[in-house]
Image (cartoon, rainbow, N blue to C red; front, side):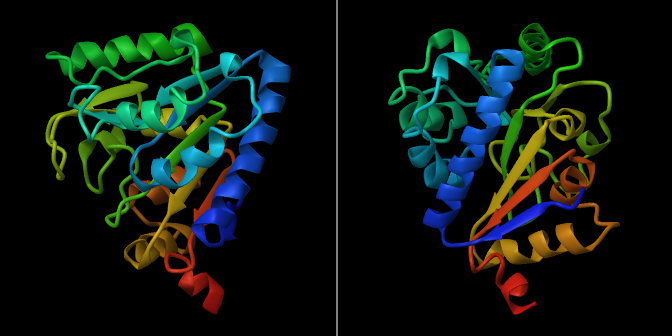
Length: 238
């Protein structure tokens, strides 16, 4: 199914995502008793989380996972968990049992990846399927900590994998793998700024693109792409 594309200013995109989040969440909670989401960090978090936290939603039946995490402490400024905690989890008083932090600051990343895989299976079942995977995208086309040309793009057996040689600091991280992301009921990808326009255009127009964002979009069951006017200027022109 071709991805749905929305081009708007960040405030308008935040409203679009809030509406879709509520719709998908209510359907999931009615069908399965819970709504399982994977969170990103970066500009996605700062643009969207302050709007999502204001939704009149049952956070006690929402399971919060992460798409990736840097090997930093939870209080570190670069922690995706720390950003979500300050912008969403604490303001919404999300119950601690619904928060599944990636412990990428563990000394043994292989063990941490295996533990997170077990947590996904415990909550979501033997073939864990997220209801919603929210992803930012880098100027190089990476999503989560899946980078262009990296061997992890070929991973098909693990739900979660460690990375010790990320091309941007810090090099040590944990990440969901492509099979985990593409198994999600809905993938949302957001891109802001002219620096992202090229990779978004390639991901949407080139069926042979090897960019991680393109691989996710091709494999996703359903996808929603949210871009601001700069990242989507070529769409407006077309």
